[in-house]
Length: 441
Image (cartoon, rainbow, N blue to C red; front, side):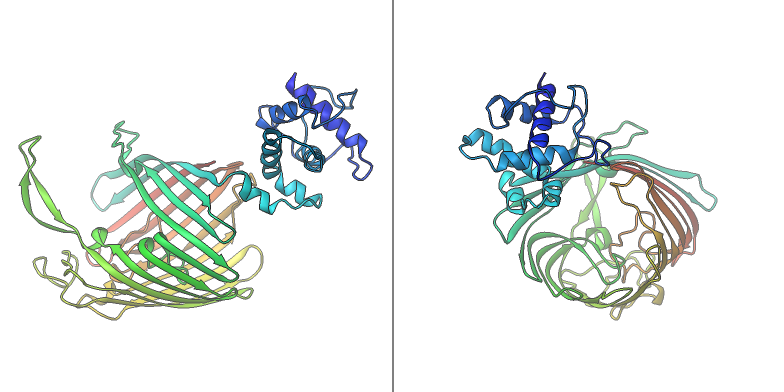
């Protein structure tokens, strides 16, 4: 009944207006039958905000399009004398159909922030990866992960962002193991003043010059970005270096089991970085510098030049980066990045990183059937590529890769990748087959 009232109200609103006409065979997307907007329309009709139920050209079982719904919302927005509850409902509808209202010439940019100061987005990930090393059995990874990404409107210039991850790799589908771990990955405030962006807090930090080859992790501190086509980003803060330099310093007894287990010493480092990028059109270029201070004395792992019992020394990490990219047309792009750490007594292969990649097309999660393909070669020395963004190319590896994703349905993306390479220092060959399906919401 509610949907019938909504359809009838929409029909009346449309036919009553001579300013906008709508063809019977329209190309616009239907509003799903279970969408909350139908109940909102029915309530507004019952309250007299939408007038005249009369005989319309739409039956109660016929879907209403987003365009038709926007026309009705536009008329409701113009109506005076509406009570607070109905006004809030109209504002919520206006935010939902903002794009369509904008096409009708009704500006609702301010409404979008007013209606709901907290917005939730996220994704559910299912990952399967199989690693085959020389003369060893397959090592399979089968996991699920929930990522929640709320955003918060503060005022006209400032917003807040956070990332909450549940379980990650420890949620093993094969064994049904569930660690129940929840982590707040990032939480920061962002202020936008023209072409200047200020970020404060625990930042999700991605090195733009090299597209995440050097660092895609978290920095607790501040970042300021200036410019439009020519951008300068300056970042300072502290990072947790446990994934790269965490040190086992002995054993202790686990009181729950009575067994010995390793005790790990944690490290943090102060960080300063600056990146200059230029992307006016088909050509893109950038240079960057990243400084990680050796505040606590990092322990060298066995694959570095130093022996296992020695420190990395008093050297900091000073990583210099350059990149160049060119887009041939809407489909094809070639990109290359090179990074070198100028400090530290480590093997030459460990102090440099580079990536050469060819990209074809690109997927869009809102467009089913769209796809993208990437292929190239990576060399990821561990003291130049500290936290690379790649899913199946880790520190201290090099090799060829090819991967691609396809949008199976709206907001459902399937990715497949293959890597054939080896360990930079040990030279052990391995292959990785990687797959991941993501459901966005």
